[in-house]
Amino acid sequence: MSDLRPAARAADPTPSTRALRGLDALNFFLADVRDGLGPYLAIYLIAVRGPDQGWNEATAGLVMTIAGIAGLIAQTPAGALIDRTHHKRAIVIAGAVAVTLSCLALPFITNFALVAATQSLAGIAGAIFPPALAAITLGVVGPKAFSKRIGRNEGFNHAGNAVSAVIAGVTAYWFGPIVVFWLMAVLAALSIGAMLMIRAEEIDDDLARGLDSAAEPAGAHQPEGWRMLLQNRTLVLFAGLAALFHLSNAAMLPSVGQLLTHVSGKDYATSLIAVCIVAAQCVMVPMAILVGHKADSFGRKPIFLVAFGILALRGVLYTLSNNPYYLVAVQCLDGIGAGIYGALFPIVVADLTRGTGRFNVAQGAVATAQGIGAALSASLAGIIIVAAGYSTAFLVLAAIAGAGFALYLFLMPETRGIDPTPTPSAKGAAPLAVPAE
Image (cartoon, rainbow, N blue to C red; front, side):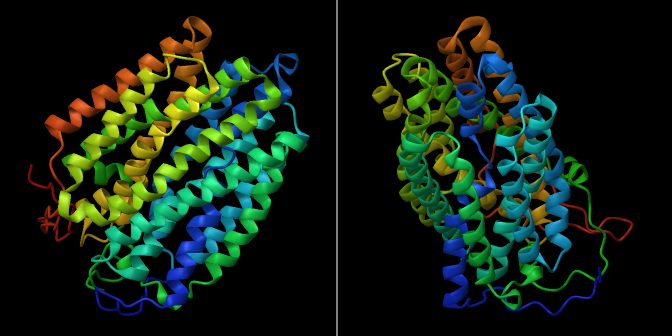
């Protein structure tokens, strides 16, 4: 790939209406595709395959862990690829096709290794979407409008999840869990159309990687994700906090889905988990937009603390009742915690990498740590559920969130306005600076 790049536009571009509507549609339709089957995977393996084919909470959790590990290994290379490439649209489209084909193959295979392989492929392809969407957004709207636009992106993302969950819940009641596979295919096709609404020339590749201009020379060295983490102590800390958040959060909804399978029966489990998703996503929409509008005025830290606090509370509340309506009500709290996290994650990373040209590598590196937490979460919860029951699992997940709250409160600085400008080294390179704490 050539290192010759066109001169960057102004740091505050004026995007076309078509491009802005394309971002809205892309985040809406790609919402379900980017996460693969998500909680529906556990429902499908337990409710449809079941113990007769060797599937239970532990084996389903193991598949999700394997897929998560594959995805997290791909995170940093995905970020580096997005930083370098001038073909971001083509990469997003290829990722959507790969995730969809991997999931559509699932009803036709029963072997554990094949199931794990297809979901691992989906996890690897899905690693492209978070850095690509954030990079495309930054390249289209510029850094000053980035916080508000990310909030709007997340709002459309959660709205897309809610609508697709409603459709899945209603159609699954009549046609069974298999319907989620065909729904994903339709959404993938629509997301490809949305991506094509954003013209390639409207994505400034320099702004998209976190540069304010085309000041970085062609062929400049691209540091690996691990190097970036080691050179930026605040980014290291944030990566650890991201891992704790997902170690606590990732297994909660799948565990609730498994619990609903036992208390309500497999015929209603998919519909009930869809209700849980819709309830949370409906809260996430205004929450993400609110975070995007207030992150610059309130600061990042107090809002992030709310996310950790709500996550811990949610884990405790799950232990108080097995009533399906109660569990759906508690799941609404996920809309607050996850809504905040999703909107603030790229904003904090952008704070810590502003002007360095390493925004997407940093996203990939932190997402790798986040993915480690998410991948371990499913197996941790599954093992605890089998050994000690659902209540114990939820309390352990809540305790992890509580630890994350304390660490963020006492160790993480406010990143709004932090100066990450690199200082040239003795060799003439420009390593990432360590922000003042």
